Image: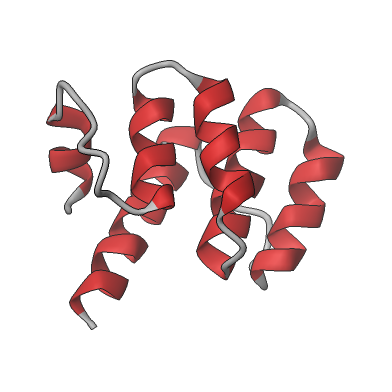
Length: 96
């Protein structure tokens, strides 16, 4: 599912992966639900989503921890750029 498709959904289909769910909840202003989804996903993508959410929250120390768990450097762009990067990476992973 592309970043645009995730944002355009008016309802989240329950069969979507946890990261798609987290992205959708975040795009619709529900940080808490997005965080719950990220916490349940124990993959590198889940850790990256978790890092992004803590960065968005302003908890940089916690975000740094989750970036390290994801094996990624701290994202240097804006939050919208990072959201799109996560969605794009998820889309590319799904195509592999």
